[in-house]
Length: 127
Image 1 (spheres, rainbow, N blue to C red):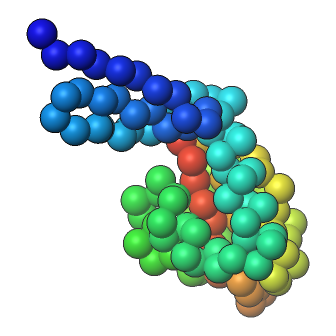
Image 2 (image 1 turned 180 degrees about the vertical axis):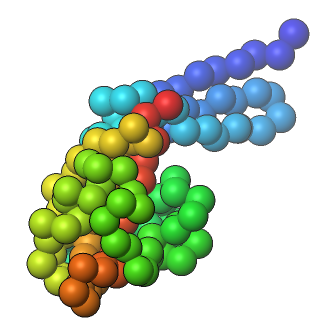
């Protein structure tokens, strides 16, 4: 019989250890998803690259490979909560963490040309 030891490290990482090797997986529940998103936002506010953080940690398959960047955003394309935050920002500004049906986000507005935005964002899903 194999012995399995479960360790919870921080609120996000679970290490399962068998005799052969440890297996690391991430467990995120809703309250932890928001905290994790805020943690990444704080890293960006302290000067880390939004593009790097989004590329490494965002769970948005459409933008993560591109450093969280979306270009050509106009009203009516994204969900209402996302648009409300995005269109309230000034270039260079970083939003607070907010929730949509997809999870928790924060946005960094890159530029605004008329009614068209370029931005970066990070998504942490709730489930």
